[in-house]
Amino acid sequence: MNLTTKLLFKALILEYVLAFISVFIGIIVTGADSFSDFSAILFHLAIPVLVGFLFSATIIYYIGTYIDLKRPSKSFCMVIGIFLMFLLLTISVLIGTFTLRILFENSIDNFSYLNTLLIFYVFGGVQTLFVGLWLGVKLNQLLK
Image (cartoon, rainbow, N blue to C red; front, side, top):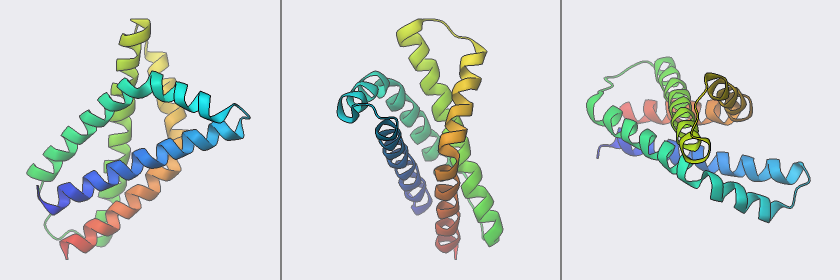
């Protein structure tokens, strides 16, 4: 595995850690019983989150293996980092929502996908932006 792939995996793991922290903080802020609600959410979402993570990890592996970044400019690295993180967020959410619908409701409608994407962009967009910026800086340092 090359350094770009390892860096992309670190960014994906950082994104998931920040997502779990955000969910935990959101549960505490809403005044719910934090541990029982957090464990219930993790229990119901464990398979969809794992499936979304595995799809994103597969995409990262292929991006890191087959795409060769040859000395792009610093701003281009930033754009690539942000774009990749939002792309991975979108893919993870869509695949996870699809898995959740199959497991629990066995029905698929487009509105639920758009609603879920909107929620993840609103509440996860800032951390995804910062992880994308971090990834862009690291890619720029890696390619020097």
